[in-house]
Image (cartoon, rainbow, N blue to C red; front, side):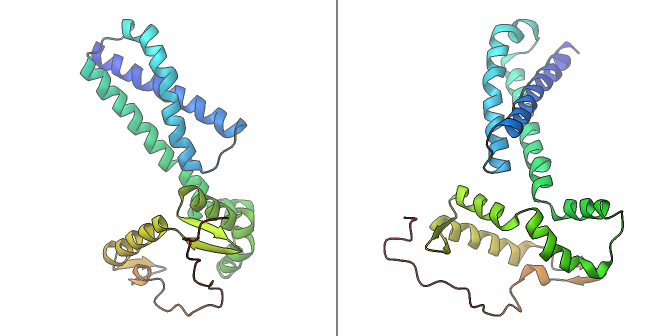
Length: 209
């Protein structure tokens, strides 16, 4: 029982330190990408936690080296799960936006209005294009050069991986508004060429100047 309580205390202490750092970071310091910065806070949180453990907790908690290591790994996994499933989901989720928009409009919106809401309100209110392009720039998957957004080699690799997974492993019989379809395994199936393509990249590799 002492070992269990010590492990639980260790996990709670780390999570509290991480959450405090994350909240202060989000409220008072610049954030480029919500997910990446939250993961950074997980690493930063390990520093004061390690100091606290060496100076205080090691003498008070009944844990072997293996038990400490396992407890720390559990703490980190909880923090990573939080980073992915809470701030990142709320920041990116269209489903969350739909619920918030319904609440904003008194709890009910005409079904036929949703396409207009997505194009006229969602894109502007969440600055969707700016945010997503910023994330890709920070990830190194695109560059913006002379008014053109171009894939980097990393971006091409990521696009090929996600395209392969989408085509072969996403549900083939997914329910969408009462009908089962494989439409989302190939969303470009009925796409027509647009007039927004850029010229071929420069021989120098298309690096931002």
